[in-house]
Amino acid sequence: FLVGSTATKKQVLAMGAGKNVAALCGGVVGGVVQAVVMTPAGMVFTSLNVNKGKPGYENDNAITVAQRIIKEKGMKGMYVGGTPMALRQASNWASRGLFTELCRTNLKLSRFGLLGEIGSGVIGGVGSCWNTPIETVR
Image (cartoon, rainbow, N blue to C red):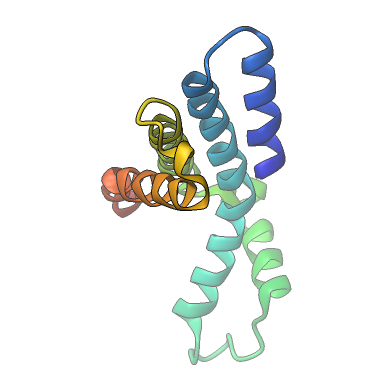
């Protein structure tokens, strides 16, 4: 996830955009990549939790659940709910990156060294909570 985000930031900066735009674009890419990887994982652990203790599912593990989903629904079955997940993760990563970069550069918190970085990250993290209802839709 971080590789995609970092590479995107570098590319956007190389194209002449500012740090804030680079943080926003890097966040979008990082969030989408995370959704592509984690949506199937979420599908598997949700199935394991829902079917825990039910007859016929006693020997379930991650591999058997993934095999069953793919057999029944195809590979697309692993990505049910993928669009809301991608929207949520992309908007979360993008807003977190943007708010953190705004604090570093526009508010000049980076001049306070480590405390400024921590403060920027905290503000970015709190600022990115606005999109939590998107996850509820999923």
